Amino acid sequence: MDLKRLGHLVALADTRHFARAAERVHLSQPAFSRSIQAIEQELGMRLFDRETGDVKPTPAGDFLITRARRLLFDARCLQRDALLYRDSELGDTAFGAGPFPAATIMPAVISRLRRAHPGVCLRLEMNNWQLLLERLRAEDIEFFVAEVRDIPPDPRIEIKSLGRQSAHLFVRAGHPLAGRRCSFLEAWHYGLAAIKVPGPVKALLARLLGRSAADEMALALECDDLSLLRSLALSSDTVCATSDAAVADDVRAGTLVPLELSDLPAVYSDMGLVTLRNRTPSPMAQRAIACVREVAATVNLPAPP
Image (cartoon, rainbow, N blue to C red; front, side):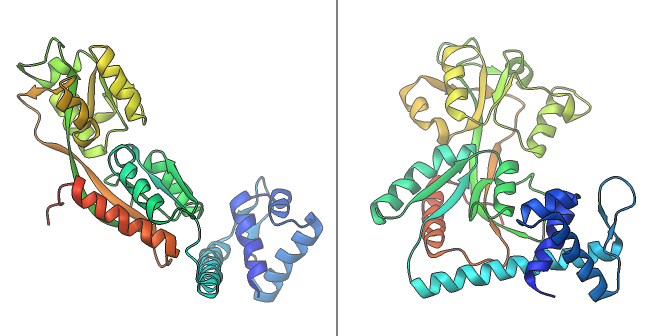
């Protein structure tokens, strides 16, 4: 059994359709079908049910496909590392950042990397952690930095803490709530704008509103673009929830002010560096990761032990 045929198994498991799987691996459908049949004959097991509807892996197929994915991943890593070792080059790299680190960490990171390595091409994808995780699993990016509390456990990924960013609710100078103590409910009535709120924080806010479930709490605006949230807070009475570091310049200038809330405990964004487990980052990605750690140490608070 060779790696190419294992790739055919994975393609069929992903697409659940012989024609689409054959197109993915650039084979005619008859040739692809013969490849799958040859594996089943070699192993003496039926790996896919074809009787009704979409093609579906049998229990034996699921068992084999899980291990095939692992072998194919390791083979890609080995080939990539061998090429990097042979060429002894930094190479280009691509990585991602969630909304808070994109605004607070990445400007300094990209500036430092460009000064140190002007001949290297970098690609930075800024998005929410769900989409960045998909990009990481597809090996389209080498790592990403984001709020990590909602990322589900996955043996394929590794998360390392980068500390915390404290966060508050901010309003424009001259807002009816500015300069006086108020409750979260009072702030809520003006409309709350934020990025996707982590589960633990959303549950806390729901309790303050007397809601039985966090799902009942709908934000006035949920948006991953911090610049838009900032502009909205500056131009209206909407309350903006963001990290202190993201609006530090506005607070120093006096155009945005943090609300003094009587019932909201300290909240924060829990930052983490997310990578594929058991994959060696490229030389340039290693330098980018080291730079991210250096900058994060100057911006973020240490996470508690």
